[in-house]
Length: 471
Image (tube, rainbow, N blue to C red; front, top):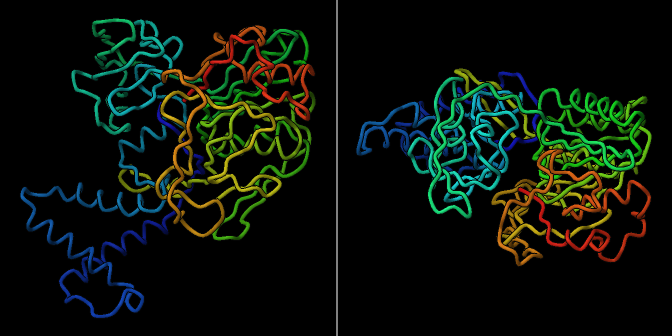
C-alpha cells in the first residue's frame, strides 16, 4: 500500500490562478533580452529563464517534445523543490492517492514495501486475490507482467498492480528458501482495506491497531470497541493502542479518535511561518475517556499517528512505549486541479499540546524499547534531503544526520510482528514482541511507566529479545 501523508482536503482556485499567471508571464518574457537587473530587483528574472529553457527544449531537443509531459515535469519540479512531502500529482497518481485515503480500490490485495531491486510483500490483504492464490509475507516481487520492478518509481508499480476489476496481473515472485521463481496470475477485484483491527487479550485487555487514517477510520474504531465489549462481556480492562508502522493519513480522523480518549485539553496546535494558526481542543464525553491506555509506537509511526500519540502522552492519558517516532510533523493540504490532477502542498507544522515540535524530532516514548530494524539502519524524517527544520525557518540547511545504526546483527527481514490480530498472542508475555509484552504489563499494572526496568526488553520473555518492528 502506498504511504499516506498527513492531509487536509482543500478546495480553491488561488493556486490555479497563480500557476496560470506563471505560465503566461513566462511565455510573455521568453523572447526578451536577458535582464541586467538582479533577481532581487526584478522578480521576472527567473521567469525569463524558465521561458528561455522551455523554448530551447521545444526547438532543439533531439526528438519532438510532448508539451504535456514537458509542462507537467516543470510543475513537478517546482513543487518537489519545497520539501519531501509536497508534490504535484498527475491524474493517475492522484487517483491512486484518493483511493488510498478512501481505503477502496481495484487491485490484487497486497501490502508492500518498495526496495531498489524488488518489492517485498508485507502481507496479503485478508480475502484478497493475492491471499487466495498463496502469496505470503516476505515474498519478493521481481516482475509485474514480465517487466522487472528494478529501478521503478513506487507510484508506477502501484499503478501496474491496480486497475479496473476483472483485469489480469502476473506477479513473478522470489520466495526465501525456494530455488525457483513462483508465478501468480491474479484477477483484480475491488479491495476494501480495513484500517482498524482488534482483539481481546488475556485478562480482558483490549488490543486496537490502527493501520492508517483513512475515510471512516474513526467509525471503524468505535465499531471495534463495540466488538471488544461484546466479546469480553464488559468494557475492556485497559487498552493497548498500536500505532506502529502507521504512516499517517487524514488529520480529521486522527483528531476525532484523540477526542474519544480525552475529555478536555489541547489535541494539537498548528503553526505557519512562526504564527499559531489553530488550536484544536478535545470535547467532553469521549467514549474511551476512562481506563488504562498504553500506546505503541516505532520509527515508522508518522504524521497523524504521531499527532494522536503526542496528544495522549502530553495530556497524561496514556503511556507511550517503543522507539522514537519518524518525526513528520507537517500537514499537507490537497488541492484539486483541472483535468483530474492534484497538488499536495505542505501548509502547516503541528505541535503537541505542550508545544513540542514533532517535525524532525518525533515523539520520545515514556518507555524506550530499542529499535531492531535489520541491517539497513533507521531512516527518519531528519534523514530526508530537504526536510523542514524542527522550528519555523524553511527547509533544513544543515546536512542530514547519518542513518542511525541498528541494535541487531540479524539480517534484514520483515520487522512487523503484529500485521493483523491473527498474529497477536492471547497473552503477549508469551509472544515474540517485546514492546507489546511491556505494553501489556503496563496496562495491567504489572509494570509502572514511572519506574520501568533499566532495560525494558528484559520485562519480556527471553524468546522475544530478537523481535523486530516492521516497516
